[in-house]
Image 1 (cartoon, rainbow, N blue to C red):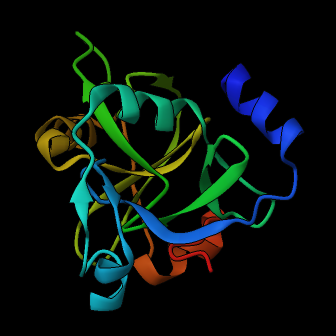
Image 2 (image 1 turned 180 degrees about the vertical axis):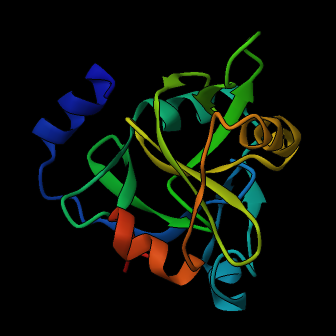
Length: 174
């Protein structure tokens, strides 16, 4: 967490939490959701405005954490902004690794160590890593399929609806 964020939390400890204003979709994109978008429907049916600014995306990534209840949030200064998740708290990117399984990275480029793999009823591949649970980015499915075909990854099956409880996260924290 950024030091400026810690200082703001100490200075203003009673700022109310924010819900419904930030979303993370299944491709690892962040969305701002104003009152009109929230009134139009839940995330991801009504996504909002995609955050394009690289500095803001990096700031969110550095200050993105979960609480004891599995609700993921962005600590924006003194305010905790809970994140609506389309699929999972992480969207993993894969990098080729000659002779072995692909390397797993979060969308902000930080390495993650694979623990196990899971397929849902739609055939989407999820990975549980040391940093948490997430969906493999759609652009990396071919690389993931090669890892499965080579026997590097042995995915188990689990219905998507059971994943949040099994892996301790909340899709729509309120």
